[in-house]
Amino acid sequence: MLPPLSPNPSDPLYRQVYQALREAILAGALPEGSKLPSSREFARTWGVARNTVLEAFELLEIEGFIETRPASGTYVAHSVNPEVTLQVPPPALKLTEWATRALKTPTRPAYSQVDVDFRLGNVPNEFFPAEAWARALRERAKALQGGLGQYGDELGPLETREAISSYLARERGVKATAGMVMLSSGSQGSLDALARVFLEPGKTVVMEDPGYLGARRVFEASGAEVIYLPVDEEGLNPEHLPEKADLLYVTPAHQFPTGAILPASRRLKILDWARSVGAWIIEDDYNSEFRFDTRPLSAMHGLNPAQVIYVGTFSKSLSPALRSGFLVAPVPIIEVLSATRYLTDRQPPTLDSLALADFLHSGGFARHLKKTRGMILERYETLLEALEQHLPALKVPTTGAGLHICALLPDQWSENHFREATLRSRVAVDFLSRYAMHSVQSGLILNYAHLNPEQIQRGIRQLGQAL
Image (cartoon, rainbow, N blue to C red; front, side, top):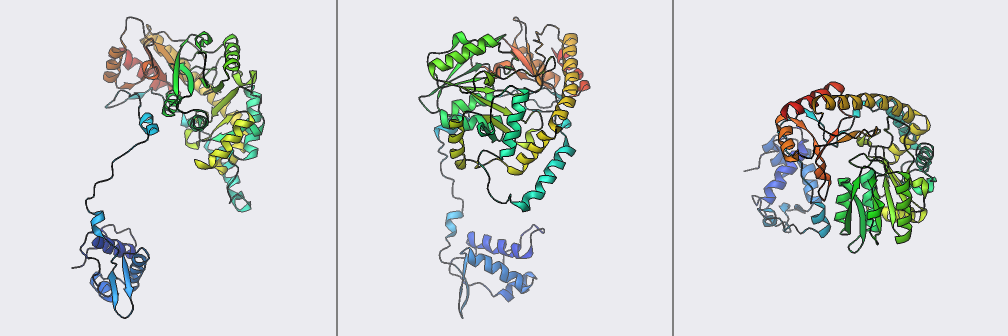
């Protein structure tokens, strides 16, 4: 009795024969040491060419399932013990402490159906400059035959790092050379790389509360002590900084998630604190390109490049699909990151990085941002008007920046009550408490840039009606 061939007709015939024999051997239907019929007999029974069976035999013999004995025939190898594959339970899942810590994630409300989704994580990909990007990528792809067939710089292509440092100096006031720039897979990749070299049990990192969940999780997973400091309408208050720390994570241009802007007086006090305790500052400049009331604010990094590690990304301004981010740090830190990168992903994607360099140099990125800002501004104004009309009790700080807003609930309102209303309305939102370790004022986080004006109006109207 021969086993049936593979039920998947898309597999090549030799592969179907190979799978049938391999599964019969592993199931014990063809026991070890037993002699197999000849290739001609297999071919005649299955209705396939003899060469097809010989191809399967060759593969099975290379893998050690069968063996050919001269002048005797083909046998199931004695080294094959089918019992090791039959209903054997998997070994116990023994996770590291890092993995155990990393798996602790604040949950989101479970929506059975969503009409309008205001949750964070959605980006306005409809604005992506597909034709211009494809053109840059196509031109760079031609260079594959001209020398890109080998591994590149762990920091990323030099010309891309030069283009980024030039852009940051012009638009963000960041004082950096190409040698201070490392390309990454996004802000999260940069934070993970920094945590690996700076943090471990016994170290201390300080961050804002509420704050960016991705940073919180990577810091907690490191095993370091994480100190959470409250923010107010001006962001992190330096008066609350501890006497000892190794790292401080801060979002000065647009505090996540409240949108507060850290004033110059606080920035200078934070820099003075970092100098006195010997701490590094990680400045996450997310969404810095999207200011509607003025030009993008200067980065904190420009005040003291020797203390501040600047983290940025193109995930929001272009697309998360590109996995394109970067960090700017003093050369000694860059040297450590470069030397240790081999152990993780070795280097950033060279082809996409070179296309990004061309996109920056050509002015394509600047034109894209100008067009995108205008469209997002319309959606921002639509959201403010809809909230004023349908949910006037919410307090909405008009920060004039970013792709989301934080709307605070009145003191007498319950966040749990509002959560029930959102579930009834089939409008998904994020809640401020999800991003806080300690008690904060109840609030909603409304991510809006990926929604058109009609969707924004409908979503806020349904929220108001449900409440």
